[in-house]
Image (tube, rainbow, N blue to C red; front, side, top):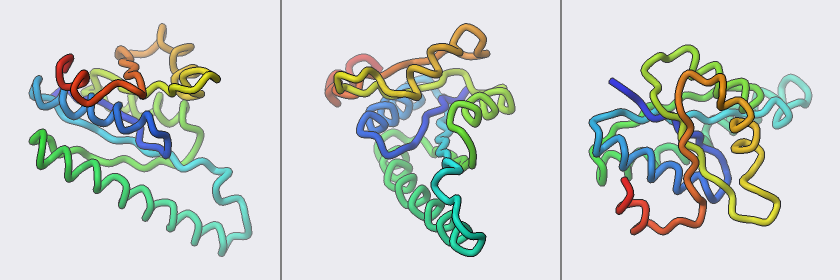
Length: 151
């Protein structure tokens, strides 16, 4: 089964990327894989403290994921899978795409502020020519109604 890969992070635009991936998956009989990456910068402390911080980060991600997963299951009939990685986001995204040949589309949300679409969209766009799948960039300020209309 083909899957949409979407990145779960703390950005506002992540919500539209999640919505788009779930709605497209529901309309096309595909699945959704949600990737969240914990940056090594988040827990570079003493060993005991870093383990606690790593566990807390995973708990936050799992709670955040469960909100999206419940909506996807209840509203779209899609049961997403969660992958949590530790490392640099671009590297981990590329690794997941290389490891799972069923990923057909990478879905990213674009930021709406004046500084640009965000570092992840900018960096992944640079790699787009060598990716084994297309990237869909969803505008962060697109309305739910417009997302529903285009999916």
